Amino acid sequence: MIFKSPSPAVEIPNMSWPEYFLQRIAPFQEQVALIDAETDRQISYAELKQNIHSIAKTLQKKGYKKGDVFAIYAPNVLSYVSVFQAILLLGGTVTTANPLYTASELEHQLNHSRAICLFTTSDLLAKVNPILKNTAVQEVIVFDDIHSFGALLLDDSDEVFQPAIIDPDRDVALLPYSSGTTGLPKGVMLSHRNLVAHNIQLEAQQDATYPDDNDHLIALLPFFHIYGITIIMNLGLCNGSTLLIVDGFKPKQFLGLIQQYQVRKAYLVPPVILFLAESPLVDDYDMTSMQYIVSGAAPLGKEQVLELRERISCTVCQAYGLTETSPATHKEPDLFKTKLGSVGVLLPNTEAMIIDTETGKPLGFNQTGELLLRGPQVMLGYLDNPKATAEALDVNDWLHTGDMARVDQDGFFYIVDRLKELIKCNSYQVAPAELEALLLTHPVVIDVAVIPKADKKSGEVPKAFVVVKQNISADELIRWAAKQVASFKRIREIEFIDQIPKTPSGKILRRVLRDR
Image 1: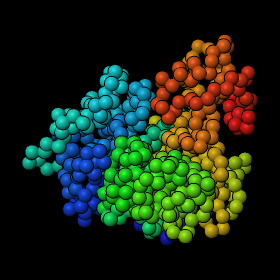
Image 2: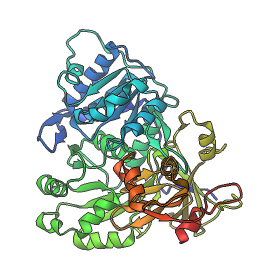
Image 3: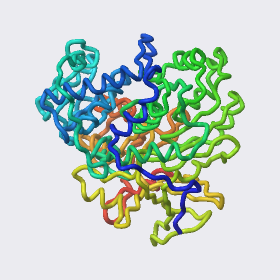
Image 4: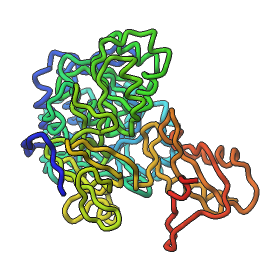
């Protein structure tokens, strides 16, 4: 059985993302687009548009061209937005990297994506500089260096910028990295059409949780994450909102911004919602402006929703998606239409199937199986990985999510379990295979399996089951591994075991370990 969206289908124009984006922001030129929450510096929509053109034009004069890959390895900063949009105007591809990444993690992404230019900040150069000789990066541009980044804005020539001719269906705009349903992180190829379609699909649901030109949106979610890119940056700016740029979650700053700017709508992740529901700090600030909170990137428990509704009188809606779907495919409709525990209904132009994991046969209402998705927001595939692409996207263009779900008679979907091995720690993806490969390089480790362990604050944290050939303490092994991965990937617990349970073909039986 194929499930369809309750909303009518919408037309997706045959436009590149820059063409669509610049058209959408045109009515808001006199309004404020961005505010740096630390310095209060403001950028208008008119200035943002000028910066986008200046950066694209300067990069073009430097010799960069359509198809070149640019990496951004930085926290949220004011100039992130203009650089991101300028690269797409040039016809380049943006690959975004988590600033928490270690040098080796960054090196892997730079090499796999074949990035030739890197944008970063001065405090990250200590990690960047030692690895550059091992990559194809030709130039590093530093956001907070006036001589480095400032030069991109000095457009004093009379030359006319020639935008790239872009095929919206085929040309890759964005290359975020995701672990997909299993294995190591992979480059997710999102086209210009994916980005345009996703924006239109969200807006077509026509509910009050979406931003407008009276809204101040806190850009709390990082711009390296697909949620931060397409929901806050793209959707927010296309609707004339003002983005409050913050570098990470700082509780007092976050609450202060809600109070100062009378924030009405917030796009958050479960750990922040837990903070709002439980932290005594919240009582010191005026939260009465808050009307809607949309939660995504990780599951949100019913208890958290009820706690927050009781404390802050606002609607809390859940959404669902994946990096591979740009990301949203489902969202709860607004006021009085939410169902506790549900991730909502399908967005327009989106179809779903739920299949039996043993037989592959489609299931009906209120039956649990793997969720499959199809729509114009679904990725082109994984970069240079035809095997993983074929495993994720079948011949009928169904994306196999690796999530177990059911759908009720009203079309509301519920994510009930996960087939895929991915761990969601503070809404960041952690691939068990990556941590297993790391631990196996330690001289005393014979075999290892990593699974998610439930954690109230972080959602899930990595736990490792380890087989060793000589004694070593769990703390020593944890400290050794922690030095080599980003903080959110750190193993929090190790349990020594005599043997890792596996199938006859050698696949780890993670469910057996979880059941322990």
